[in-house]
Image 1: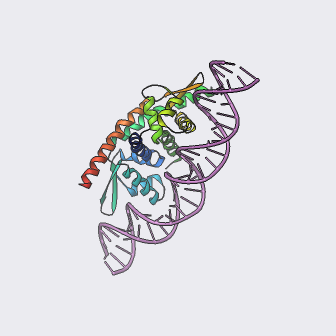
Image 2: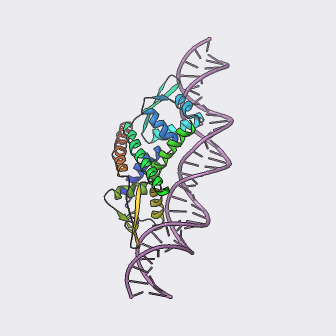
Image 3: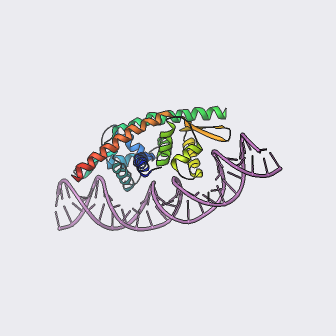
Length: 106
Length: 106
DNA sequence: ATAAAATTTGGCAAACTTGCCAAACAGCCA
DNA sequence: TGGCTGTTTGGCAAGTTTGCCAAATTTTAT
C-alpha cells in the first residue's frame, strides 16, 4: 500500500480506535444527550477520575468531543454527533450475531 | 456502572475495535466493492499473508465479514455492509480537525 | 503419491493500552 | 493566604495487540 493511502487509513483508524473502548463508548452515548462534566461521567462509570480524564483526552485528541471549562468544572460535549450513527449499525451486527449463534447451537 | 450495562458496551466496543486498525479498515473499504480472496487483499496491502489472515479472522470474529471457501481460495465479503456508513462520519471529523488545525496555526 | 498454491495457526518479541495511585494544577471562597 | 473541589498529568505494572516467521492444513493438479 502506498504511503499516502496508508496515512489516510491510519487517520481514519485513529478516530474509530478512540471509540473502541466500552467506557469511551458509554461516554459518547451519554454526551449524545447533552454536555456532562468530568465529575458526572466519573460517578456514572465508577472508575477513578484520572481514568475518566484520560479516556476523555483520547476522545478529544480524535476530535470527537470538545471541552469547555466553566468555574472549576470541565464540561464535555459531542463535537461530531454523527458518531452516534455507529450505534444502530453495531446493534444490528450484534442482533445478527445472536441470531447466527442461536442457529448454530440449535 | 452495572454489570449488564457494562457487558452491553463491551459487546459494542468489540465490534468497533475490530474496525479500529488501518489495515482492517482498508479491507472493509475494499470489500464494500465486492468479495475478495485473501490473496487479493494480501497483494493490495503488502503485508505477510499470515498477518492479513489474522486481520480477517478478527473481522470475522466480530461478525463484520463472512468467508466462503471455493477451491483452494477463501473469499471474504461484508456481512454487515452498514459499517461502510462509518466512513462518511469519520471523514467529516477529519475535515473538521483539519479546519480547526489550520485555524490554530493561523 | 507427490507437489504446488492458498490459507490458517502457533509462537514470539516489540509496541501499545489500560487503570490505579500519587502528585500537580486551576479556580473558588472564607 | 490557605483550604477545598474538580481536573489533569506522570509513572508504573499488568494485560493486549501487532506483525513476522515457520509449520501445519486444505485443495487442486500432475
